Image 1 (cartoon, rainbow, N blue to C red):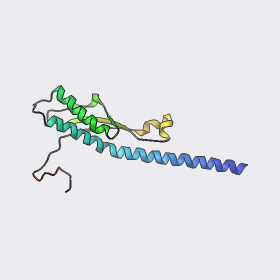
Image 2 (cartoon, rainbow, N blue to C red):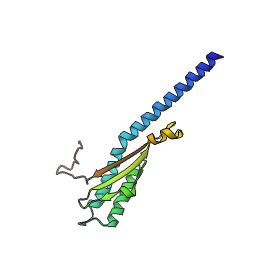
Image 3 (cartoon, helix red, strand yellow):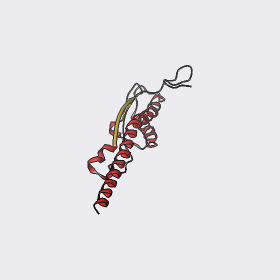
Image 4 (cartoon, rainbow, N blue to C red):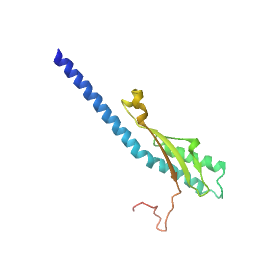
Length: 140
């Protein structure tokens, strides 16, 4: 009977350790991918601002830029903060997004739940295309 209890306890510990490892990997991947995905959303917003013929972006331009960023971010499960979205006269934007890593155990334990949430703020300028047609940093 004691052996069964010990085996059961060891199995439970092993399962919890495996779930913590899986959740930790999910959080790590979310932390690594969110800035790149948010940057792409920022590029979409900056492109909207850059293609308008305005010296100073209007509120309508800011709304259109935010909607473009939100559409791109939504593809990656990122929620944008309307309050932290800023558009500048140089066509750059500040964008803040939050993503929640998919987890098995963290979401069920209140003291670990906050670890799954990733929030990032970036300043993004419009992409420029050089005479070769390549964007900076791309390889063809």
